[in-house]
Image 1 (tube, helix red, strand yellow):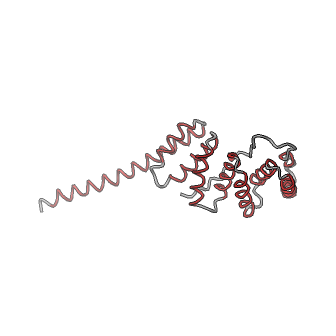
Image 2 (cartoon, helix red, strand yellow):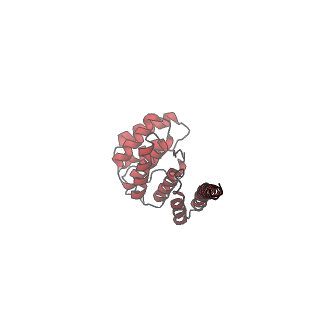
Image 3 (cartoon, one colour):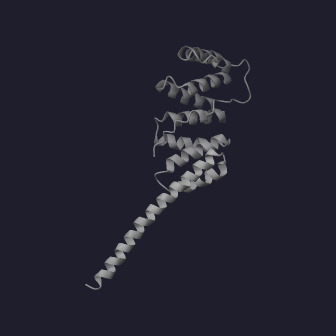
Length: 194
């Protein structure tokens, strides 16, 4: 009996320390995420990436961290990395319109206009009143030289949103070198499932 008590005490201590350790780790990852969010807000993207990477140690935060990191890569012009990350997230949540829109934006910035068109059209089939996707699709059609499609979609847009009279200004006469879709910052419906 005297030998059992120390063994039981050691086992209880071991299990208590394991539970305490996992709670501490969970809190630590949450703190990393909070720090990353502050750096992100302050546009210190290098530090934000560092702390999002650390926070990814938590399985509960992995998708949120990957989403934020993909946004940073988009905002800093690393479209290839952003594309990979958004694609990976979209594979996990294929009906997420925010992820589709972000990926379409990245495709447009990379110059993969056909893929961007497919994604935006897919979004607009499901969400016919998505103004950001409509405007970006109008600009992409225009940039591709598909003026008829751009004008048709702009007319449809003008009917749905008569107070937004500037939609036709998205259609230019000349093809420009650099396409500037509307920034995903304005389309921040963060609905990334964890």
